[in-house]
Length: 225
Image (cartoon, rainbow, N blue to C red; front, side):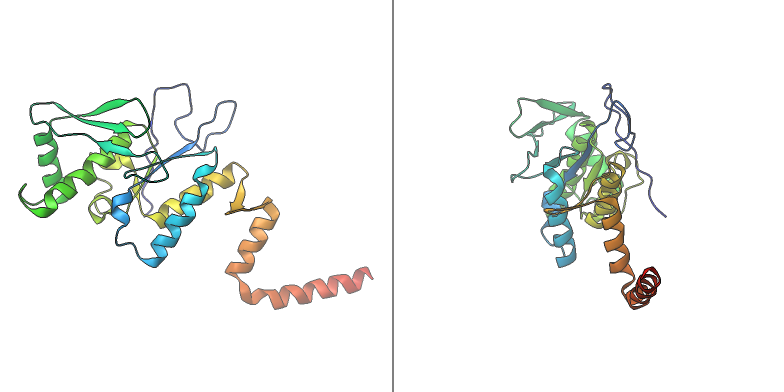
């Protein structure tokens, strides 16, 4: 079953979904959960590299969760006396907060992610996964690209579903559909028109039909001669 996407509602004068076309349109906002890519498979690594190639398009607005080529979300110091979790975006003069105290989020992480005791080595990593997803949501972003099994395995749960956690392969399908909805048919440095894109796609998907197709073309050419 395909999990529905909960499109962000920023409150700005823009469509709730980036797929809506018209006088007012908005980009697709994606966030790379960078720290979760450490043990990515070769296939996932390649998919992530392809996704990153599209980040320069004006139709795509991308962030990361660790220092790199993209601006990234930085979770601030957790103060048990506060009733929020501070975070910022690198390179921007903006500080925001996730509502709720650190202890509240620790409990939430335990309930949702099966987090071990706070002293366990995995405890901070699991809490950080949840907080990054929350920061992504509070920024009204669309797709949280992650390989964290804790997030992907609980994507329908409260406090996680709004982040729309998706694997790189799932995110690639969404991004591809979005670009085609904008009549953008591009791969890396090569741009196709609509007809050439689907011609190449059919040829890749049905390689054994091309002998038959060539035969049909030969017959058609003979008739026109």
